[in-house]
Image (cartoon, rainbow, N blue to C red; front, side):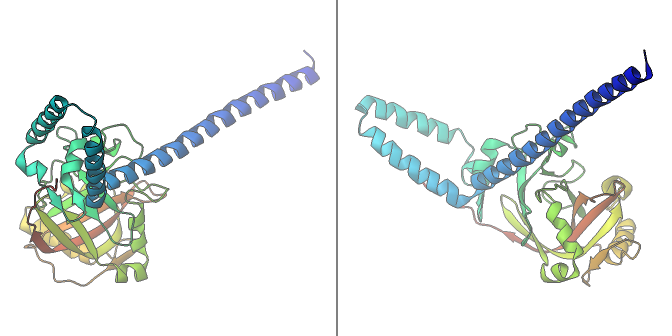
Length: 301
């Protein structure tokens, strides 16, 4: 084979390789963008499901539709339909049928996934999500959505090392740092001193209580597992940890709010990844300042 033929063959092979690599890269990009779109759509759907106003509107629409249909049904069919619906309603436990906290309708959420046990909101961010915990696999919701389907964005979740009533000294919530701004991405807003100064609270809605946390620190930290690395039930260890969290000078970027926090307090930690540093995490931490029980009301017919 001549040199010219060898060169021609080389460039042909190189062209094919580049074309294949480009196709693979484009396919991967399209898949990633598609997952971002579907994850965002699923988040909007679950927020709509949780909304009390949305459920009320749906119930009213269903009621109107039932009336329209009933006018066309023979009496025997109407009676059977009523019995079926009564049986269906009564099959749910009383506490499930009545569980609504503010704008969060746990009744509807539990129909989708009983692993949902709380809802978290951080004003002026996109953090407005259910909180889940999977029995038997602490990493399940790292890669699954609220429908228990595989999802790149995962869900907001806690591990079994934390109790679901937020009674631990430090409850740690995890969420991905998604490029489209969803999940815990917008926690990075707290890197801005002005934003930190003007946004102080985290709200956690439980079926029977509303918890309000005042944010006292937001900073970069290493990637150690907090609940494995620190025994927060040990008062001395917890005290030492709180001292660092309130004065994280070793962190690359940090903002703090001077509050009188002691080992008698309960704190919450929201943890997400950094943009480019795999060995670091960004933490936003708050201290419990209000625990308000709610009065349950029966679901309106």
